[in-house]
Amino acid sequence: MKFRAIFALSSLWFATEASAHPHSFLDIQTKALMQETQLTGFQMHWTLDEIASAELIYEVKSSKNPEETKKKITQEMIDTAKNEHYFSYLYNANGELQKFTDKPTDYAFEIAQNRIVFRVKFYLETPQELKNAPATLMSYEPTYYMGIEYNRHSDVSISNSACQIRIEQPKVDQSLRLYASNLDKNETPDDLSLGRQFAQRVIMVCE
Image (cartoon, rainbow, N blue to C red; front, side):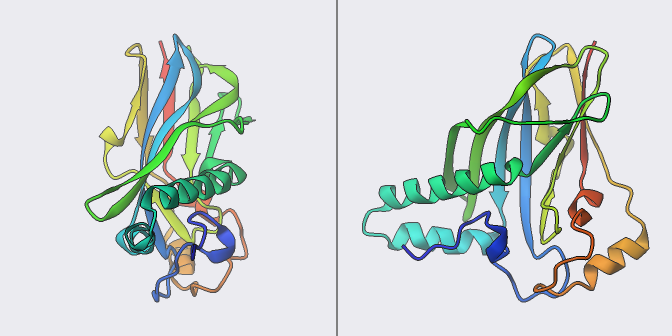
């Protein structure tokens, strides 16, 4: 099967001919999974942009065995997502980075309105107590080749009604925006945390 791994940074995410970072876009929706006031993991939906989606849709529709092709694509997607920490970084109230397990569940993708929607649940190695202890989630691709973004406040939710969740927008100065806009699609930024500086923050806390 002719397939460039959908999340593989080595293939740089289905590059377009544009000359500014980011070159590919991912719309994200996140639900924080709770056991009472402990955060146990996340359920995410990742929606690829139309250009990135087009090749995968073609792969499926032109395959002699579409269901088998979908299974292979799904496995490649989840393998790379695991290797990239699910493109998500959770910090506890002390600013300490938390690890996720390598055992995601309920992962699959579907085609919706000519776009690929990949869904997955993944879990923390150690559940985090959120009662009066806010945690911060950031989702990004480090080089900012791919832009990951929540489009609406309703794109985040939390499974315990006694807890709150909100999105904070990044504060990016004009010089950094100009630097990113001048990066060619084949260039790697000097600072591999460029994506982090453009990342939205999802803040979660329980009463």
